[in-house]
Every structure is written in structure tokens, then in C-alpha cells.
Length: 268
Length: 357
Image 1 (cartoon, one colour):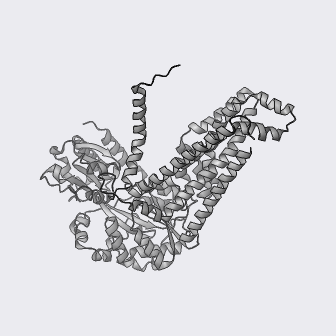
Image 2 (cartoon, rainbow over the protein chains, first blue to last red):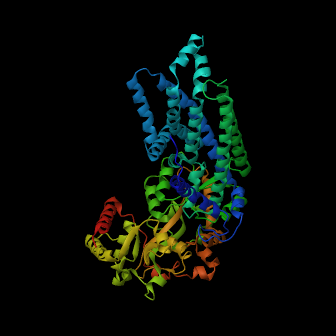
Image 3 (cartoon, chains in turn purple, brown):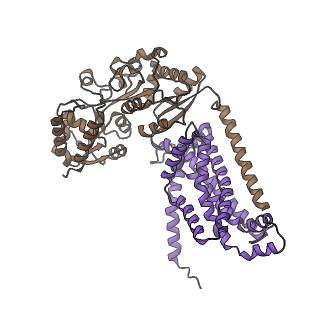
């Protein structure tokens, strides 16, 4: 098929990107304003950045958010892989579909419902609200996402690959660690990063299960924003935006290098 | 597999590294220690310098958390799992929390500074003898109007709202007690009235107000008034002082017919771990100097008579926020009317909302 690169599609793309990025840039510009409000840019200053870096409580909250995101993403990836494998190995097609549907229900059900039910559960069981409760609930809503990211990779894998490995005398552990896992690695990383972003920006669930001085960034910004957003939040958001950009670019280069090196299929 | 294990080891290492860093920071800040006090307050409702001063004076580390509605706060306290030592609910929430046994009694012997509070603001119906709560700030319900938009028309009381010139110009705060209350007040009845014929009269009078009403809204009323979307609004004095700073054409008036007097009080929830520290904190906030500093920052009306003397005349003589005694006498605190009467109020308010122009 011959591609027609007219002006139309490019213009459309440009408009979409402007719409998507304009609010972020608007926010970033005002992080340098010496005023206190998000209108009437008053002059350049870095004082909001200074405020952010001096606010230890905010720094602790940022670190908390990162720890929760990393741990919950990693643990839910491990659980999600097990779940995806279990669903994959179910022979009965109807059971398999039922399990998959149950998995998807958790993804589509609203965050508020999940958050409220976790609050009730933790209260009944007697888990103190704080780090553990937030971590557990984040793992819980991330697992279905990982399953959904890993399962297509498993289905894509040719069953003959496993048969061949078995023929060549591989044990069950060998098959898992040397055939299946390397094949689905891209899916695992995709799942991990999805879980990471879900955890980083989750508000609704976290809002219900935080307490005892433990808080994550989204909840903290929400409670600060009640009285109008202070521009130090802009500064913080700008810093986080650039950190994410660096991470994305880094990930891109790593992925590119790996592609050149090993390619798809069986790794080392 | 190797790649996966390596990646995940790195992830876990980073996570635990960050965790250690957080722990270290917490420790350095003193949050990890035993001697802490968790204060649960509305957002931006305290001068944070006072927290530092309190920490210096007592050596107790304050963990300051905020909520955005009485309901959210009550849920968090009710379900346990949290250790809030001091909270600042509004008076109706205090009555409710008292009923549900969510509060610890306050030992007045530990609060020598309580004597600075104006006796007018003590021993009120929502908490007789202040067994469970100590006043933090108070305010009224009144009318905010835009001088520029109304030209020279002066607003003095509730009955001015019915002026036919204000067609589609009034915003109301969405509260059954507030709206029914001002209608009752405009008829010179008490806003705690339970007489059925009085209530019906008030409701009928409200129906006549509908042509003037632009909208009945929640928190966004502040923004709408600042942006001059409407010329008048029925709001709490706290909101009024906030938006008057943002738009200089706005003016606030406590209606001459009388109005509601509301309170935000400090309480000690039953989840408190540091009851001793909580008393110290409340006493600290009652200190005239601290209360005055806090009032300057927050901009609400302080119940602290001694603190009022320390404030500049510009603040303490402001009749909009410290109404003269003749008017103060006409201000009433909401009484708990019981579930049945309250739902009747709500029903009448709902009927009024659905009334066609």
C-alpha cells in the first residue's frame, strides 16, 4: 500500500498533540511565575522549586508513592504471571472464559467501589491503614492488568515450542524458565509498566485506604488543592514530568538495544 | 529468565533503597518517634508556623493531616485504623460524633487558657458545658454582594433578596438548614422553628424568591461570585472573607433579621493515642497570642476574647465578621431538631428546589 502523506493527517496529528500537551505546558510555565495564582504570569522565579525541595514532608510522600508503585508493580507482575499461566493451562474452554471474565470484571469495576470495599475489608480484618493497606490494594488492582498484558503473549506462543523442548528432555522447570518466560518477557515488562503507571496515578482507591500520616502524591495534591492549587504543586508536577520523560527515553534506548541484540523468541 | 531475574532484583533493590531513604527522612524529621501528635484539620485552616512553635515548646512532633468535608473526616475516624489525636469538625458533626461515641471527654483542668474564650461561645446546645469540644473559629451565614454590579443599592437583610430588581442574580449555598433558616429569619421566626405553619409560610416565601435565583450550588459558589457570574450570594462568612480578598467589589453583610452562628471546634477523637499531647495542643491554640496569629492567617472570627484584643482594629472592629452585640443577640446556633424534623426540613427544601418559576 502506498502511503499518501498529505497535509491533512499531519495537521490532525499536530492538533491532537497540542490538545494533549497544552495543559501540561501551561502548568509548567506557571511553575516559574512569581505570583501565587495560575493566571497573570508575573515574572520568572525558581522559588516554587525551592519550596518543593525544602518541604521534607512532600519529599517523603513522593518517595512513598515511588516505593508503593515499584513494589506493587513488581509483586503484582509476579502474581499476574502465575495467574496468566494458570488461565492458559486450563483445558476447558468455558472455565477459561469464565476465569478471564472474572479477571476483567475487576478492571472495569469502578475504583470507588474497589476502594470502599477494601476500606471495609481492612477494617474488619483489622489491618491498620497505612503503608501495608495501600500496598495490598494496589497489588490487587494491578494483578488483573498484568494478566491481561501477559495472556496474549502466551496465546501467541506456538505450542510446538513446548513440545519440542519436552522432546529434547527439558524438565517442567526448564520449560518454564528457558522457553515460556523468555518468550513472554515483552508482555511481562509491558504489564509491569502498566501496573507501575496505574499505581503512580491512582487516586480513588488510595484515597480510601490511606491513614496514619501515610499518604501518596495524588491524595496529598487533592487535599492541598481544596484551597486552590499552590504553585509549588506545579513545580513538583514539572519535576515529575521530566523524570517520567527521562524514564521513557531510557526505556526506549534499552528496548532498542535489546532488540538489536537478542531479537524475539528464545533468549539466553 | 536471567534478564527477568536481573530486572526484578534491580527493581526490588531500588524499592528497598527508597524505603530506607524514607525511613531515614522520617527519623530525621522525628515522625518515627513515639512523641507525636496527629492533627486532623480542614485544608489551610491553621498558620503552620504555629505548629513549629508548638513543636519547639513541647518537643512533640506534629503530623498534620487535612480533610475536605465533615463526612470524610467522620468516616475515617469511625472506621478506626487511624490515630487522630485532635480533629476540627463543625458543630453539627460534633453532635453526630457525640451520639456515636466517637469523642473523648476533654479535661478542662488541663486547659488553663480556656478562660480566654468569650463565655458567649461556650456551653452551646450542640455540646453542653463543652464536655467534648472547644471552640476554634466561628462565623455566620450572610449575604455577599457585588457593589459594582448592584450600583448603589444597599443590602441590609434577608428581605432585600426578594427585591424584584434582582431577577436571576442570586446564588444560594446548597444547604437545607441554611436556606430554610434564612427564610424563617426573614419572617422573624427562629431558624430552629418547628411550628408547621411557620415552616409552610417560610417555604411559600421561598417559592416567591425563585425568579431571583440563578442557581443553588456547592463549593463553586465562591468561584462564581469572584468571577461576577451573579451579583448576590448566600454564603458562610468564612467563604465570604476568602472571596472578598480575591475580588474587591464584593461586600459581606450579616442580615439584620438575624442569622445562623456556626462553629468549628477542636475535639479529641476516641482513636487518639496521645491524649495528653492533645490537651497540650488545644491549650496551646487557646493561648491569646497564638490564637491571634492564627486568626490573622485564617481570616475567620476567633472566639478568643483576649486574642481579639491583640488584633489590629481593622480586624477586631470589622462588623462584618465581629457583629455588634445587638446583632449577635439575634444569631442562633442550629439545634439538633431530631431526625424526623430534619428530614421535614430537607423535604421542604427539595420542594422549593423543584418549584417552577
